[in-house]
Length: 116
Image (cartoon, rainbow, N blue to C red):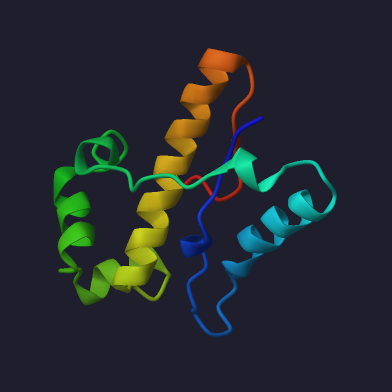
């Protein structure tokens, strides 16, 4: 069984309502309980700009990728933007894509993370 996960999904955001450490805790639990072995976990690659533009406008995607968000954009985002957060979300999107492809090939695709 393949599961897609990256420890880089965890990003320190203080007391934010979205605790990113939960993804690592789920991975640890699946390993501890023997549901997965370490060899089952595959670290995804970050989603490409082209992949991101399947769900976002070029303007938004480029602002995120270049770190040129306006104050209004940051309010819309509702997350404290950082290069680490951007990487975490690109990895998570990449993990979702890989899990979907795996599901189409084998009938089961697991992603231990958000679908950002």
